[in-house]
Amino acid sequence: MKRNINILLLVLSVMLTVGCADDFLDRTPTDAISAEAALSSPDNMMLVLNGLHRQMYAQSPLPDASWSRTGQSHFMPSLDAMGGIVIHTSPGNGWMRSDLQWQTHIRSDYSTPRNLWYQRYHFIASANSIINKVEEAGMVKDELMNNILGQAHAYRAWAYHQLVTTYAKGYLVSADPSTQPGVPLLFKTEAPYTSEPRASVQAIYDQIELDIDQAITYLKDASSPNNKSHISLNAAYGIKARIALSSGNWADAAESAELARQGYPLMDEAAYTSGFNTYDLSEVIWGGRVIDSETNYYAAYFYYLGTNFNGSQNRGNPKMINNAIYNALPATDYRTKLWLPLAPNTNASASNEQGGSSTTDPNYDNDDDFWAAWSNVVSTYKMTTGHHTHPYMSVKFLGKNGGTIDPDDVPYMRSSEMILIEAEAYAMQNMIPEAQTALALLGDERDSAFDEAQFDDQAKLMDQIKFQRHVELWGEGFGFHDKIRWDEALDQTGSGAASVLYQDGFKQPKASENPKWVWRIPQEEIDSNPNLTEDDQNKY
Image (cartoon, rainbow, N blue to C red):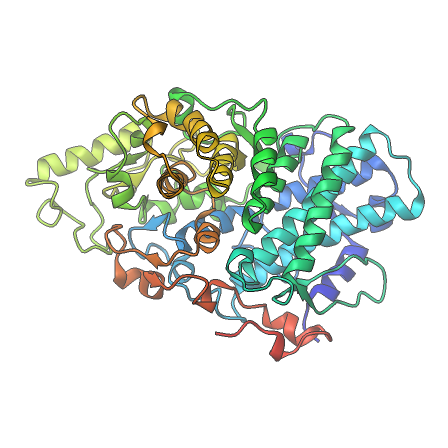
């Protein structure tokens, strides 16, 4: 029998990835200890949670996951590439190419759907172990234990939300979530580790909502989080806001988003253009602190998106924003500085066939100016002479030590996202003044000439909110699921993306009409789970 959730739980019962000290996330590598020891005390349970914090960004040691699909470090840029937000300029070294071409997630035998599935069930299994042990042993629920249980319930809610929004039809585009197949719902951690059939989408959401509300209850009376890698009360409210937004629970989405952003003021221009390379930025609510001994180097978040990271993915394949979106940004918006519309196209292998010299790049008419512009970009952003440049390339994510492979932090949640959730939730309730007020919080900071009064009905507000999410959250992993929620088709026409590179990922009908927005369940799971057959597989 091939590996599946059952075996994953068996592995968990023998070994849990944990840290070795309270300052694990600052300087200490992970280790492994027995499950009995890992669950024997609150301090050891916290180490188990530290292992989950690491799994958010690190290379996976799980038997059913490959090291090249490293938690959120891979899936955030991948989902934005699939959703038409992060645009690749060339085939590069091949990494993520099949993702953006809409090839991997529709194949049950590919590593992309397998990794997301088993990594998320690893989070669920670990959370189950903590939650069940506390209840079975009748452990005292003091502030430390409330912190542990709050994070465990929040991680379980987060993981199920990731699974159900990816391997099942979107809640808002489904005719009836109560009959739509979701994912297996698991609570047990003891033998015989029997998995379950697919629960309905509604059943999964019901459990997600119970878990995140329980997490918030615990975290209200918990010890303070050690750092931003831990799930705080604010982060739990942010997870709740995302859940509510995806299911159309607009009132909860607005309320939870507002609570999530309290105490996390928006960055000013200097901070916003500093490279997004530390979770110490004021508006980062939840993020991964990546330490030297735990970095995943050539599968790191900055390997995909860090303009000056010294890896082949960046050197030959600078990522760019949708050209039409960028061109719609007013000059008074300082986010225009995060992309370079006139960067020379120096890569002869660029997919738009305009790269290599001034004779092919329409922005330049002589090689002296062409290469001088390249030299200026390289020196300004601390890239190497091996880095190519491309029009509309991003300089949003910049490594602190440009031209190296040194690790940098990964942002999972920012207060600007919460503001945009508020605005969308109010707009969807047709609460126009409230939506305008929320939108102005972000717009006034980013654009000195922003005027929310021009967005005076629901349609105008939603158009602006979509535009703002595209710009503000570029590279942070929301593009694919945003299009599902909005039931929008994917169309890269006019974006700068090359159809020869993107292939099936260049155009796709909207999710309500197109089953390919739902990922295939890993074949290992179908083969091994006694409660699933080929009839349970997502069909295209």
